[in-house]
Length: 156
Image (tube, rainbow, N blue to C red; front, side, top):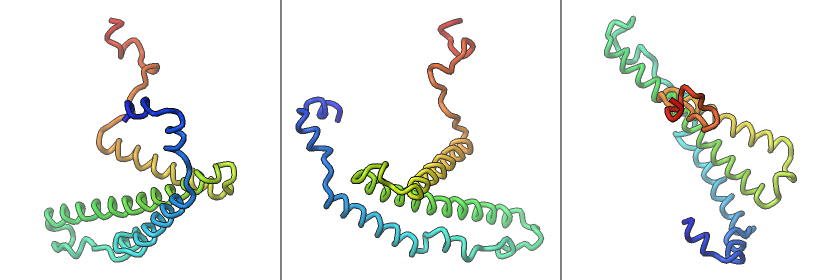
């Protein structure tokens, strides 16, 4: 891809990133339709949480069966992840729609409430990524400048 870009003339690069109002409007309409479909489907965050299964429905009342408790814990964890995924997907689609509008008019022309909404979407997405990384045992990679002499074997 990079070789292709380096081989392009400057006029071709300009043409490649030229804004087309019609195509962007079609794209935004498609994104808006996806949001509507998601919110109306059984995969919407509200519907996923609407009729949860309780622990007692797994049997072994009073947590008498360890297997039933384990099955319920797994169900509850998966349901929580699905609700979060649905919410994040909605945020991503909404952010994409906002970005399409911003690509036409520029961020300066956007209302402050839309800017705040985009910042909130970014923060929720960032927080979800940080949480997922922590749960998976992945830490943030250290930048080159943050390594001390202890962490750099070339200085030993």
